[in-house]
Length: 308
Image 1 (spheres, rainbow, N blue to C red):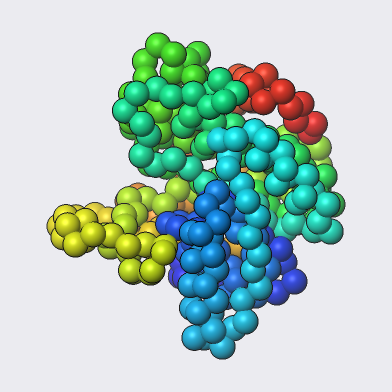
Image 2: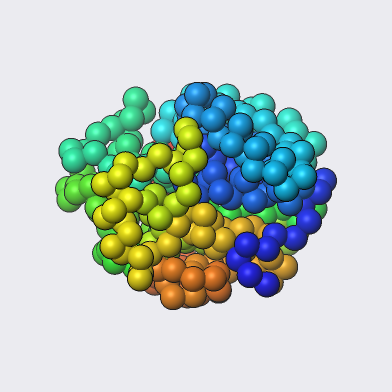
């Protein structure tokens, strides 16, 4: 099975956060093409509309009528997360949740959300923790439901400061991104441990897209519009990069393949590019003791008791 192959998803409902661009867009498009009803959870209404139009057009070109809807979600805003979660939790079923939304280019200086959390951590991890906690009832009542958390190669290249998750002592943009992705991967693996301990049919997997960049990605109005300079520079990295469309293949594998068992980690075969394969995560991401501390921290910061 190649990374572009997605099994029939007819009758399934998928929620993809940050679905209006990048990995989230191509994940959503592939799921819709395979017959799933896809809920695009996006912060920007205009960009969400552009993504919907693009997915409908891509699916129509293959004779598929895409089933789509948009839900407003800003993972950095606790109120936005609560409103979106309240509406989504009333669904009859939710077969797949892809925790993709994230801040890839952190600010140069440390910034806080209205709730006092470091902005990148809140956007990439804490918001998803709160969202999935609220969606747990509908996830549990959907047979075979799966949660996929989007990790990053950065988790292998950074020392994880579990004692300074808010980066009050050692903030840099790179560290903020890497910290947030390690925390999200850690959450994804711990979620599966707890699901298995509770003997649920639901599972949690983690995936990373390798080194997937905009300049090597198809140009799509309102979705991916790299400058000529970006395309030129990114083309010089062709030997070790791939498009975001290809990067989504690892996420799709973790989301839909039968051999993507709970707790598995998926990424490109050559780490930065290639067809998706099962891999070993970083030590920090997979350490149960670290995960316990991350989980307790997330509960304390969000004020949500994740009942599992």
